Image 1 (cartoon, rainbow, N blue to C red):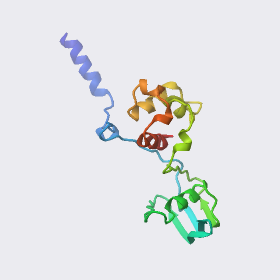
Image 2 (tube, helix red, strand yellow):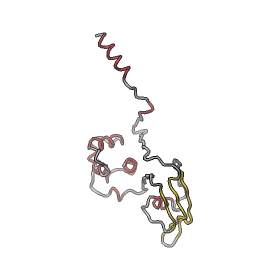
Image 3 (cartoon, rainbow, N blue to C red):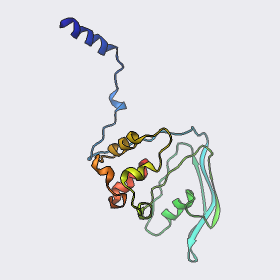
Image 4 (cartoon, one colour):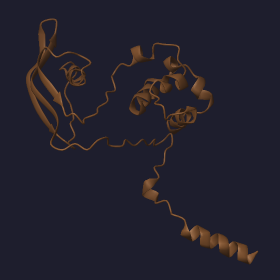
Length: 177
């Protein structure tokens, strides 16, 4: 018995140990998601020249210039109705700008989480089916269910209709899709 225990101890000592900083805890109180970088970018991630937009003859912004270096972060802040969402929608080509030019680095990848996601969830898909829309050949059902689990949805929740999710739940889907 003692020999077997000593052997198990030796085996455990040889195993690679998981460092605590590698394990991100997740709970309803403090959920955790991580995003991996894609291709490495050097220099500029985004260049905006003389960007402008407006609606119904009223200009929201005009002559906007921006040079965003690789690795930099950008916060868009302002009062309601000044064009923050319109600006972001122009950047991700969801809305065609009325003037100016937007150039993304060829290695840049971006995502956008809209304020109002109702139209994207206006269907009869279950949570599992909704998440499965972005599957690649290497993703199987288990991987999709695992992603739902990391978002703290139970196995029963995967059959819930996506349209019935709360706004916060829909936002979480956008973050991982």
